[in-house]
Structure formats: structure tokens, C-alpha cells
Length: 417
Figure 1 (tube, rainbow, N blue to C red):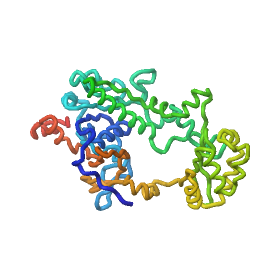
Figure 2: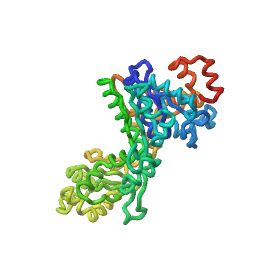
Figure 3: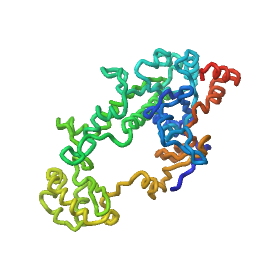
Figure 4: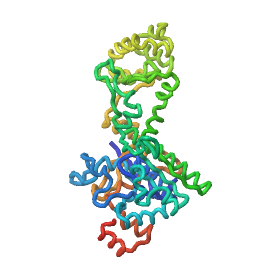
């Protein structure tokens, strides 16, 4: 597997004029701030002295050093924190709170994911901080939002996948072996909330640049999960019927699912009648295209219980790679089900340089996944590895706040940083 090197730091940065004070931890907030860092923002990650982001301890696996021994850097933490500078601050102390308020005057964005009202006791809520910087963009990420009957509750991805309907449509059909609700294999709700938060921050910065007005962004995991139901939510709102689980099949398109081949599994995604006809022709069953029960997609959806077993028997006759070659030649969308090792060995993934190596102070090098955003003039750089705990404390306090080494040493001695 080939890793790419990070782009040259001399390239222009889309957000090189933006500084972010990141009070978030775990995944949704850090995913947002990592996006902003990849796009060039100076992200200052605030962490608890001695402990840091919760995900630093979410291992194994950990990054390994040159001798192959585990470092203290959990792979989970590494996945969401590249490009940032780590500053340790005791946020519960009055001196730490004063330090953060001083930093806010030098920042464009504050990102936080504390429980509703928690930061008000520290004078770090939006109302307090906009007095310091009126044009501040302040983004809060919570489980349920800043208002409503659930606002006080803690929200976690797994819970929200269930509450927000995703698990009701994910998993095998109840009438088949293994049927029942399943969560997604990655924390989709956290990640999508981080992505929506990124969009919201960029929109708020654009508004600020036009008008000089800052604002508070209220992002909720549950809101995001409901929104990302997409066509599934629309199907319900327009039919009044709650959708059910279809496993690897599709509620509105047939055939659009996995099939067992002679030696593995194949995804077939026929998006129109022409592709369906080519599929059954390739399998030696052209009569299935002419059959009036299966001639159009609505008819195939209506008669899926009759059609799918016939297609399954057809697909079983050939090996996976034989099917892929045959269907690609005919223009029928298809593909394998890769494990993650096969993903990073895939020739297209390698050609797009999705795996990168970044220099790291304790591991030597860490392997990460490149930001997928590609822009011709201001590329996402992914140029700096996730920081060690407090790695940039002295640098940030000296550079941003003008603190002397003696002053920083005194703060360290009192446990403030």
C-alpha cells in the first residue's frame, strides 16, 4: 500500500485567516474542527491537563513507534484531530477561564460540545463571549439541541441512531435469519453532525465577512439524524407508512442489493429498466426482462418476492470477478464488498492517495486517511499530525497571548495549563 506525502505548506490555505478555539472532544466536534484545520484554519484544541480528549484513551489499537511498541496515541483519537495545536487548560479554574476568554479575543470561531448551560457557569457561553468579540461565530454541538424537553439529556451516537430512526431501517428484514435492528458500523450520526457543523461554521463566517455580525450555531445530533433520513423520511411523510428494514435490498428499486456468487458476494445496483435488462441478459435469463411481471421497476418492486429468488439462482452460477467483468462491460453498476484492508489496497484508492503518512513526535510516522476534499487552488493540506497532549501550550500562549516563558512556567506550576 502506498501512502502519499502531505501537500507543500507553501500552498495557499482557504481558511488561513481563521482561528478556531476548539473546546470539543470525542468525535462530532473534533470532526468539524479537523475539517476546518485541513482547510487551513489555525485550530487550538483545548484539553484537560494530564488527561486530554477522552478518545486519547480509547484503545487499542495505538500508533506504534519505530521499535513497533505502542505509543500513547490511540488510533481513534488520531482519526479526528490532525492539523490542530493542543493547549492544556484547567477550564474549571478561574485562571483557566480567564485565559480562554483572553484567547477568544484572538479567535473567529468557538466550537464546543458541553451539556446545555454548562459553560455559562464558567463565563464561556455565547452570550458572555460575544461581549468580548461581537463578531464571534460560536457553534454548540449537543445531543438534542439548546431547547425542547430533551435539551438537558446527554446524547450519544448509538442512542441517536436508535431514537432517530436509522436503526429501524438498518439490518436484515425481521422475517429473515439474523433479522432485527442494527447500528451502522461507524458513528454516522456523530460524523454527519460534524459535517453539518462544518457547513454551518463556513456559512456563518461568510455572513460575518459580509455584515460584521457573528452568531450562535445550535447543532443537535438528533436533528441531524432526522434530516439524514433523506428519502426514507420523505417516503414516510408522503405515505404515512413507517419504512421497514430491507437488509441489503432497496425499498424503491429492484434489483438493488447483494447477491451470493459462486465464491463470494456481489452488489448489483440497477437504477433503470435498461440496466436491469442488461443484467439478466448477462446471466443468460433474457426472459426475465420480457416477463410482464418484471418489465418495469414499479412492477419489480411489487413482485420482488417472486423475482429476487430467480435472480439469486442466476447469480450463484458465476464467480464474483467473472460477474464484475461481465457487468462492467455492459454498463451495469456492480461491485465487490471489500473489507477495510481490501479498501486501502484498491487501485483506485491508491491512485487517489487516500492513505497518508504524517511525521509524528512519538510514533515517527502515523498513518491517516486523507481529507477527501480536492480543490485546485486551495487544497486541503492534512499537513500536521494530531498533537500530543499539550504539545503546543507554550507556543500558543507565547505566540497568541504574548506570554513570557516565566509566566507560562508559573501557570504550569499552578496547574492552570
